Length: 385
Image (cartoon, rainbow, N blue to C red; front, top):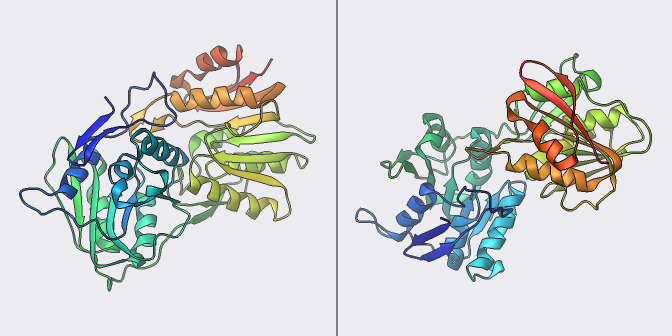
């Protein structure tokens, strides 16, 4: 089900991390539609890909792999996307150096001749990326966006039009649509509003009044989400020189609160999103100071953390992978936490009641304790025995 066939060739594509139980594909109709358009249609000639090609928001490296002969630059907020891209290049016999991998926190190429945008779930991330890319396109740049129909809204098109230039869409094919934009370098686009900074309310425990920084695309970037608010009211009170992990740290509010509550703790903030880790770093430094020791890691959960080296893991796991609902991420986070924890170390998790995380925790840890609950959320504790 992961074979993508185009006139450029046939590609065997996988998501990362590979999971035989995962029935989700590494590409979809939006990727295929864009690649067909680039090849040329009855209504349009092939797109000239001899210049600098930039692919933004590639989900699992399908676009970059299919276009590897053009030596594109891929810009992604996702560490897992970068790993998937490397894996898919290798699986399909392409040189790893044929695709330049950049994060959303790095400067784009100085000149962009073809800009291909896979529309992200987050409108804020799209806005931020278009602002960052706009100075690097020119009047002749070919700009094509792609996404499933349910991902492309009037607000999406308005962003392209306001930041880059006149915009139109294609007809829908297999529930996918293309966006065509003609750059206008003289367009008065205004400034990039991201990152966004705000102060927390005074009723969230140790985190009360903290200054929070959110880069675009981070979950609930403009306010404190209700799950994290509930978690902040029930964090464990600890003391002593412990190693604490804010796993899937987002903007770093939970880890920062833990650090302020225990001045001897050393906190590791980790997330697969480059935007999230940049946000956590800014949030922590704004509230804990420049001299307080902490680690900031963009990676695949706790896979790079040595086993048995952590005392406490705090986790608010996501239950979406792009548009799909899945518990695969939570499973990997819980299993990684168990490996990283010392004997007697604890994982504390907040989640929606209906997700049934207590079942996963009992399967992985052999135990699960309900710490707190309300009609929507639960806080659970599991101990490595």
